[in-house]
Image (cartoon, rainbow, N blue to C red; front, side):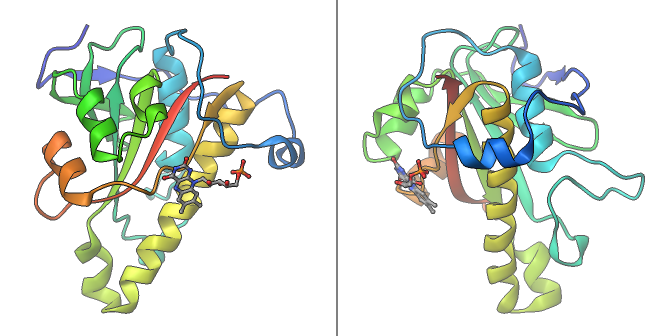
Length: 202
Ligand SMILES: Cc1cc2nc3c(=O)[nH]c(=O)nc-3n(C[C@H](O)[C@H](O)[C@H](O)COP(=O)(O)O)c2cc1C
């Protein structure tokens, strides 16, 4: 089990799966109820890789990024994940690992920040998409904000289809207090929370 400040190596992601992309798109549905079963570390790693994993020696990722500037930063709030103590973890795509930021039981507070949507509290884990707008806006100006929002959609859909492929359910949670989520996760000032995705077994 990781302690705050520790790194957790994630298992190498799989590059094959049981279903076609057409099947996954056809069967994908938002899921807000999950079994109590814990997630495995490899499952969390696979989901994060699908959203933002590095797939090219020049640093390109599973999801496209305007100017390859990669403004997205992903966090995991772990509630029931084998091999992870409850707490908040930051995904490092370059090393495909997690950095433990703090080890509090924050799921209840995160649920409150999301206007008491129960799926946030009940899920074994919640993936939080944040963005540093400035990385993209310094090149593209005001239009860069639009690009960041397009990118989070790409990454989230990758995670959605990957979850479906693994028999996991998820849902986009866009209704939350930005300030409250930033506080619960102790985000740096320039990290904007954009989307929560609770994940668990269907
Ligand atoms: C940007 C966005 C924000 C959403 N926010 C929420 C949310 O806060 N809570 C929720 O339960 N569902 C949320 N949803 C999920 C939609 O309710 C869901 O996609 C829609 O009902 C269609 O169902 P389906 O995803 O199963 O096709 C959101 C979806 C999107 C795209």
